[in-house]
Image (cartoon, rainbow, N blue to C red; front, side, top):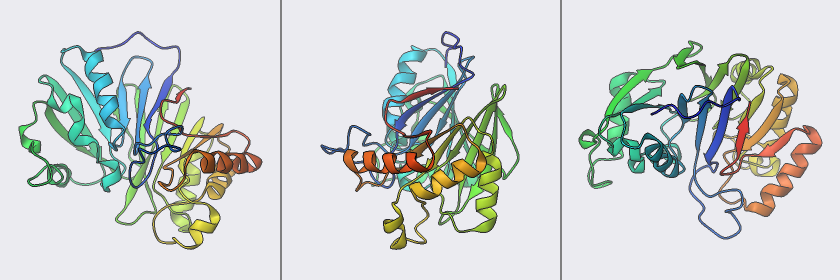
Length: 282
């Protein structure tokens, strides 16, 4: 994409989708937001990394296309995993339909499988436009546990988290500014928990799965998600600067999430809800 005006922030984080499991386009839910996971991370030089392709990526795509104004460029898209709520918006991502654009996908599986999984949700009868007919060029990059890769000035370190069929989080760093994106993980695996704590240590911002209340989690063990209570404990033990609760349950409306945030702040004061449209500068 064309380089926008430089920002004084080393990293700018914008939330386009914050829900888990399924969109919630309902009254009483839209204050926090109804789209599934999609986060834009932008470095000061304009390099943009998109985290996940839930339904929030549709609006992001329109914004990126308007910014490009028909000029060639690149979009970097890192996928935490391939569950549907993290891919739902991809067929409606405008840069994929723009000649001259290159969309580069990063995921923790081999290149052929990445292409196969992306093609799968756009095959007949699920979608009318095959992945192979898209106007943009598409490329894939396999990422590996603990092996950093570069996206412009951003150093991105993938790390595994405890989730059915596997998932990865990302630690993103530029000039000492550190963001950790840790969605879709379940606490209780000692190795994964310690790895997440270490990769989060000292981060300026931790975006953490917090789908369940402790009471809900008691009935949903093994589903691959954690609680706001565990997220605050992680933030405390890792010494992060700020915690944003993310991947909100589709049954949690604005009022419920407001109460959760109040409880979470009693344990870790610098806690907020990830909400659609929120912009955080590091």
